[in-house]
Image (cartoon, rainbow, N blue to C red; front, side):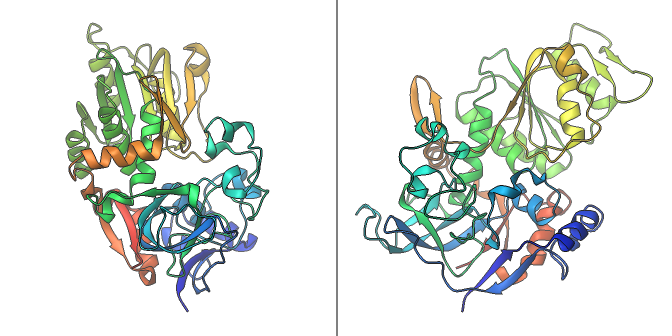
Length: 416
């Protein structure tokens, strides 16, 4: 029987991991964690509209790490069904098709998956309002239909997930054909790349705009590349903690990189580039807490999602500027929201994707990701620089948790 990495619900284990994983990341995958390498039968096709996929590669996402480390908000807990097999960043081959699947989806085809489990996937008609508008990630029927609850493939007990040799089942509307010119390493990042495109398209496009990207992990790097690939002309400033991240950010189109942790020096560095007429940079220190600035970037895209980065984003955005939260936040603590009010900032979330309005045309975000990957000539392939078999899942997760320190960008499971 094939093996899979499965998450199961256990309140005592969840509390233990939540308490320990910040200080000891191995707790998230150890003997008392909420995941196990198990033997599973292949999941059945929920209806004749579904296909079965044998995974080739499946990525480890920040949302996976949050779930495994029990660090995320309990907000999503009513909307998943357990136990579930993880893995929503998938490239694989179709190995079985249901009777109602369109004929162009043939066995053997190499595909990637759009993971939102929306109305069409669930066999629900008419579609809810978000789905009817192409906002599939915001489906209002994620607890209804032909499958169990779940916001995405990889968080639903009916579908299986990419971290499995037991296959994953997918509705045909979730499929995207992988162009022959793309490697598996490029195809597996199409899904997170689509998330990055969705975030990057919210930023101003003009040449005189200044965009600050906080964090140069895989999502931050993909966001920088997506901004340039989609025609963004502004200056892109970025913060990177590690040298390999800074080097990649420059290659992907960042104008200038700040190396190190956020602090007074970072604030001054930004203001020297956004408000050069003010000398010295107008950084003010209150009695307690972080510095305060009166200027800042036109838009800040937070690709970290920590309490500290959210606080920095608000402080470093100019009055009436834009903040995009692209990194998955937990429950922020110690965030001073005064600047949101005082500067009249626009705070915008960026979750998943569906369709994008670009140049008057409505385009599917995943298709944009695949097109950009084809056009990149292999530029993004080096992001996938850590591969592990399922049996080495603890090492894989340690690699992902400590990506910056180890030189990793994107960690993936090599299933086939």
